Structures are given as C-alpha cells and as structure tokens.
Length: 319
Image (tube, rainbow, N blue to C red; front, top):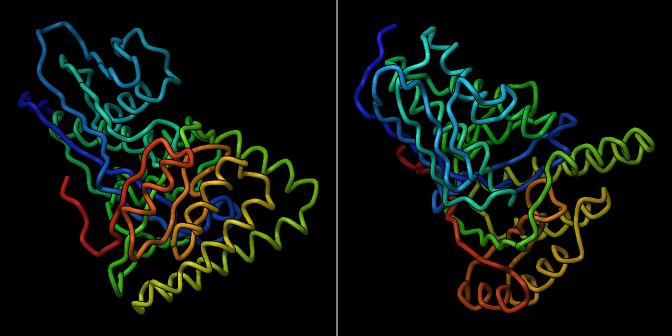
C-alpha cells in the first residue's frame, strides 16, 4: 500500500459514562455519551527519508522513535497495530499528539488519544478506516490500559455518539428524546481504572451472589435510564443517578472526596449526581437543569478542580 505523504490530522472527543460502570464488565448494559468540549488530536507530518516514525506527545512527556520504543507502551502499540492493519512499513513521519482531556480522570483520555492516533496515521498511510475497524483496534489498546475493558469507551469515542452498550451484543445508538445537560466535576484525584476493576473482581469472587445482585440492579437502572432518555423525560434521570452512586459505593469504588462532591452537587440544586468511570478518584457527574453556574461554583468552592457542562444530544461532533 502506498503512503500518502500529505499531512493528516484527526480528533477524538472525551466520554462520560452516565450509568452502568463496573457492572458493564459483568454483562450488564451501560450508557455513555461523548464529551466534545474536550478532545485529543493527532497530526502526522512527513519527515526526512530514513528518519522513521517519531511520536511526540508533550502532554504525556513522550518523545520517542517507534523502532526503539517498548512494544507494550500504548502509543507504540497503537502505531504498530495501525501499520500491521495497513500492511505497510514504518513511514518517515512525525506523529504529534495533544489532548485537553485530563489524564486518569475517567473522561477517556487514553482512549481518545489512541483513536485520534490510529485514525490520523491510517489516513496518512492511505488506508482510512471504517469506524467499526477503528473501534476494534482501539479496543486492543484498551487492554493495555485497563486489563479487561468493557468495550464501551472505544465504541462511544470512535463513533462520537451516545451509546447503549452491553458486552458481547451489538451496541445501540441512543436517540435522545429531549436534550439535557450534565455537569462534570473533576476531583483532582487521578482515578485508576485498572486498580478499581481488579479490586471489584477480587471482591466479586469472594461474594459472587451479593455482587451479582448489585450488578443486576445497576443493569436495571441503565435499562430504565435508556427508556427515560429516549422518551424525552430527562428530569427523571436524577433519582437513578443517586441510586447508581449508592451501588457504586457498595462495591467499593467511591472515595470520601467523590462522595462529598456528589453531596454538594445535590445540595446546590442538581437533580441527581454520581461518580462516573472507574472511580477511586476521577470525576463526578450531575444532572443539571437550572442554576448551572451556581452549582458549578459551589462544587469548585468545595474541592472540584474544574467543571464543565456537556449537552447530551443526537448531534455528534465532526472529526
């Protein structure tokens, strides 16, 4: 396959899980939506002959040549997987990565970077990918990041659409009956999805019946939320968020800091709030309808490092 030597760029949004984290690993459904206010970008530019592929990611402190990088480094693995998929040799190029997505915050930073990297490099190589193939390659990189990923992150970020996802079954794109807004507040404490997932698995192995009941109820919440979202009654999602958070507390993935932010969001007027993502740090989400600036301000007074509002709509972002 011939290499297209024109500069190519690609973007990928962040993501937020509305319902179903952790339970989704055990076959229950989950709902996730793209967060287009933050994104990862990748640009591939031609380099001098014989220079090989250099990957520069200043946000991650990375600057290395592909041929000397360790094979299990996620950026390296993503580039090599793309070359294999495109059946081509390493190009002479510089691949520059940037991201405005907080690292280890639960907003899909690693997934977005992989998605942008693979999409841009494939286009530079002259073999642009269908979204399904892109998502499948990103899923392989997710295994390096998280060990046993559910598949929801790569799906929602690659397709850039709200997704209802159950592992092992075809994903469904959600039709949003009425636009609503979610406030995302970052605790400032990096999350650790791999540690959280492995911890839950250890506890599940010790108490399978108890944990399966919890996972089942989380799955029911996701199903109820799907109906509410599609029928255009988003105000009713608040109580489901609150219950989902209590169940995540039960399986041991919340922290006092996250619990405090959830409490403050509700106290300031949010219709509901919960942690989102792997937990053990990261961020919370809150369903907000009015007094949004006030709620954001209160959360920042009470410990949130940053907040942003993301609308949940049927419109996906352009890459």
